[in-house]
Image (cartoon, rainbow, N blue to C red; front, side):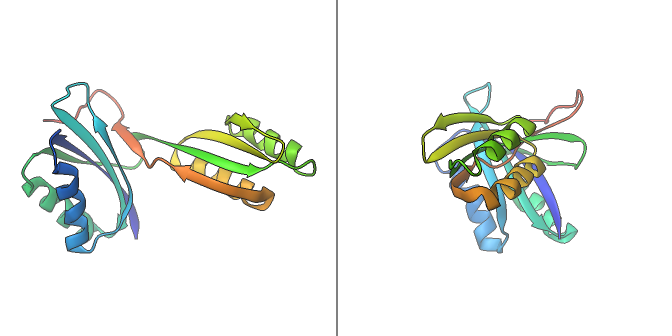
Length: 164
């Protein structure tokens, strides 16, 4: 299994996201993350879809996406040729035995403590998915209470842009 990041440029209309995500369901593909938002032009949205699969799965998905009404462009973002970012907010235990370790880890990972109470801390972490996973692994033995991740957003490096 390989990880793929696909960027999809769509018309910003009612039901488009449902059609795109429905394609995954009908074909039995598993979405790892799915993010989207309006672009600089309010008529269009850009979706970033992350999935695990083989080359055949990737090709099938790209071909099916291109056939959907309201989809203007589909592009595979190749590993190493795209900038990827994700946001996570994580709530961890704040007890005297682990407090300094949690704060030191937050500093090392350039995370930001956004809420501090006597029994918990909320920490914001932004970076590539590997950084998010690594920070989660460090926090797990220190007492994760709850966490939420946004999913990947990505743009291709360099001067090339997604053709519309």
